[in-house]
Length: 399
Image 1 (tube, rainbow, N blue to C red):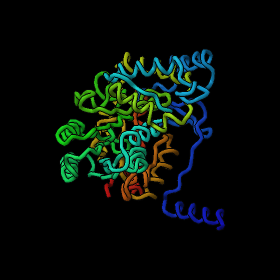
Image 2: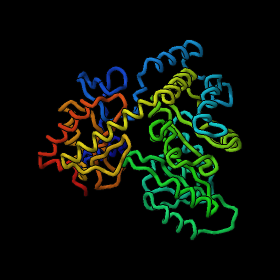
Image 3: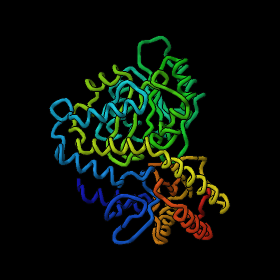
């Protein structure tokens, strides 16, 4: 087989279908004002929702952590890589989420794969929202369990699917959903999902990667909004690389859950621990997220300002009150051209296409941060208004 020739053909097909992705090189720190390949741009594409990724106290904690613990953990947690900084962060995350214990993973993808594959296997069933993140779907596929996907945010359909299964057997039935959906910006009906899980003897797992730190008065995410605790949602997954601005992820729950994951989660057992310096940075970011509630207040005012301005322009937004504000264009080529036009106008905005989103729903994924100013939001709206006036872009036209 001519591997080079085959790969060239596949790449050409991606280019033809408007699915080819190109990396932009950022120079300097993450933030709302970034330099991209030598050009200053306002960043409306990241997940640094609270503006903590380059916060001086977080950077200082990372630096002190490196001085105290070195650059790397050197081994897996169960070998010799579990340090004091890791342990302290786990305890603080457990307290923040209102759970007995928390367990650090090196990435959010690994946390989801580790939790699902440890909890479900052959003979079990995993029920997932159709728009779940790829890591959740991959976890179910790798587990060997049956995967059943229910329509997006449809608790009634989930109940029907669960009811149709084998009742009374000893198999695990695991319900898995994102908390705040990363491409649509809407919130899962977690109270209804919890009710279904309770009524039909299933276990509920929520990945609130995009909600923790952002939603709720204290930043407790979608479960705070729904007033749900550990008993209602036994498995909570969170990330440190979004609202908290650092790196890594965790699973939080009862003591028995965490101890079981330590024994059985392959993505915890067989990988090097997070650098302890990064754990120290995350501790500083967690403290700031908890103490500086003004960040959430300012962020939500910006969200309201953006949505009001978009409405005045006649732009069609998805029903999101989160920092994620998608503008659906539909066609891959349209969203690529729109992203390029916004970049030339001074803005960095993600052009999201399949398979990240369903075919025919390519979109501009606009994300807001507590570090943005009202002026920056207004400038983006002006650029979108200019774009909307051009018929080739069809800004806001739903498929």
